[in-house]
Image 1 (cartoon, one colour):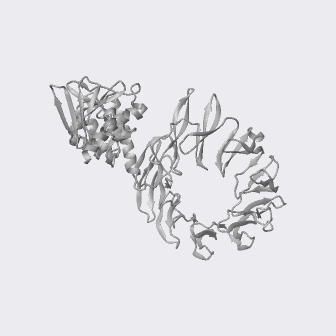
Image 2: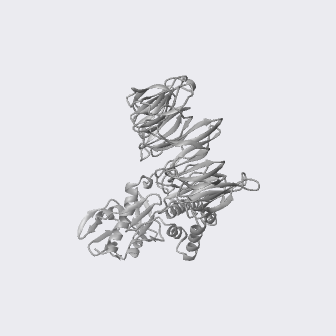
Image 3: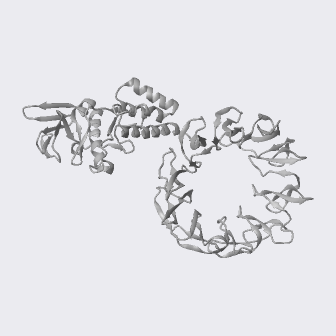
Length: 595
């Protein structure tokens, strides 16, 4: 069977499938102002006669099918019969008859052949079933898809709505593609003689979808930008892949972004939240009072009902799998979620599992997340911190003024001795070292920056998790290991040390932030303010101090700012200091991965 034969049958099937599988195309629900489109082998095909519905079934013009696909169609005026033939099958229709003949065998039709305005229309569903073909359907664009390599392409849709005028179609498409000004262009066609209002709205939606798909294809990192008071997403080449349509927009995490729109509720303006997928499409309406990212396979949302907040959990298909109607619950971690009853000083915390069952009773004034199998707790406001296991059993007695999550089986705690000093403990509560530091920062690769108060000023050194002092506290500032180096301060200036605390760059910078992507931001005094530049790990100045702000490098780019509110503008530079995104936006966030 050659390709044209298959394509014909697929077209017929498509139209039938539209009405048999999609409720949007049922007779009662059909919006007759929307057009069913047909895509055949990488292009849309057109007919001068519209398809229509009889008793819930689609009728399509016979010549449209035959002309496009090269099938043989014959009309016999004497017998009032129409014959459709390809290499393998012959199908004969008779006007006014409920029967057709397929390869010499009589078959019953669900609907008769229809003649309208001197054009013959064939019943698609039954014809498709007779030929045994299958098709796909793009419900977002109401397109019947025949053949391979289908794409929802704005150029072809422009041609579909505006006709075969290649000059007009190409001009409009190129403007849309290059400028991204969809609404402005489409408005120029907003007349009854050119396009109906509903078609304009459909074309807007399809072009936006097409624009996003084209520009998000292969994109792995995005930045949130602000323009004219609203937020969208921009890629590393400066393409606006998601238009600034949102009052609130949060960065992507695991392929999902959170957005919010302002709505009127009981006469008041409030924000309602929803989700965007990795292609920038709104996959939920903005209906939630609050929304969280996915954690442990579930996303927590808040939905008010009769003035009361309900906490719902959505799975990856955005279906509600758990509802908490009483109390307040939080995101899941390690199979459990923190749960609260009461408010203020009377609030008590516990944990629930993914069925909503309380697994640790709500009796704690403070309760941390589980880490290394333990969670810190505090029973009352004036109490001390200890640790419980996943069964709610006290493993480490509450003896600490402050306590932090375990990391690599070590936790930082603040003792309730007279000096209120910090130290380390193990998971069984064993004291690793005698508490002697006024501060201990996060443990990174088995060491932590520590500090002591010396004559009213803090000085910093390094201690390992065994309690051995690696670097005596002598520095005015000392950063944790970041990107393989430490930033330190001595004699009121900043320098750079390697991983083993060997000095690489002597102190010479007014201020130096931690390294990321092999670059760090430094600061120096300017005429009226402090300016920012960029250095590498050898202390070589890559970007002179010309910016009012430079954020840390992320995914190879750093966000820069010139000016101050309300006249500040943001852009982005690469690791060599080249401006890759013009400094013209009201706001830009650091680039993060979509997934």
